[in-house]
Image 1 (tube, helix red, strand yellow):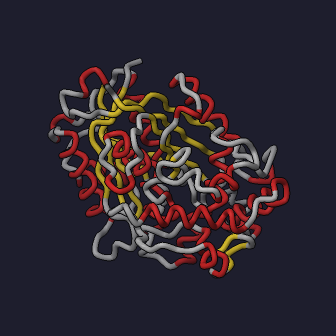
Image 2 (cartoon, one colour):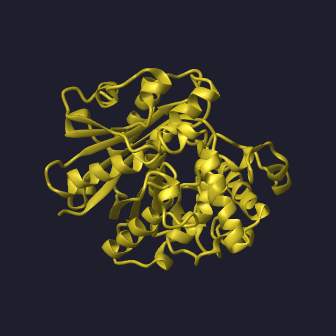
Length: 387
């Protein structure tokens, strides 16, 4: 297997993009990535496109061919990857495997979602497809409800407080202000989070990631030839994925996402690194409690210790470990098919030293963590700077 590097990345602004459709979003991000990689359309050998529910949101299936068409890669093989909210990370992993295997030299991975063209109720139904339809959704529970069960159990076992969960949202909004691609550019306070409307107790509106439109694209190449295209290629040191039961009730524990723990530990082993080696991480904070779980399941903190760490500022930019410098799903937005690809783009930006006001000083190693459903799928990538 060959070493693989990211040689290009592109993003659209995330948010309510009324002025653009699905194809315009992917074309915008795609052209940025191709320009960044210093390649031409003729160089592309395969395309992976990620979306969770383009058929439900805008009626467009057969997405991969559309992505290749809109980015100008005619007649190139194109494959759609769907893995709920982990679709983007899963597509990146497929692209990584394709290049590492030697079958292809240049792979483009694009993630996109256009979620705001439907009502909130319709979006909730579409997103509910990431859970167990028979045993969860048909019984009336929603994803905020599932994560509220997780939050309540974590509060019971580890004395985690609503204020500590709110501090995750406050920190991520503060980071998003420094990110031109982010959906929200407004600071919030712990008091505002606590006083926002209850969605599913103890989670309020400001504990939840938003409904978003947006796209992200990256370009992969063999590390050995990467500098032919880009002076600052970023190596993918590890790619790992794991699964767990689809239904929350079948899990061993409500306070651990086992798929995250397994994927994370496998990634550390492949990269020959420890959690303490990670300088910056983009983790899947679909709800504030999800970021706390991720920090623990990725072994950045012991069980029950992460909430206090956030509260004390250890996960701020240039803290003990910088978490969600982009603003995360909460502040940057969560167009579900694009999120896992966006996470890679953010870490690439950080490791290149190009993140501006949100730059982590001396960042050399970064991690991305993308979750599908309530934890049935987890994808972890570790990236590092090439000297």
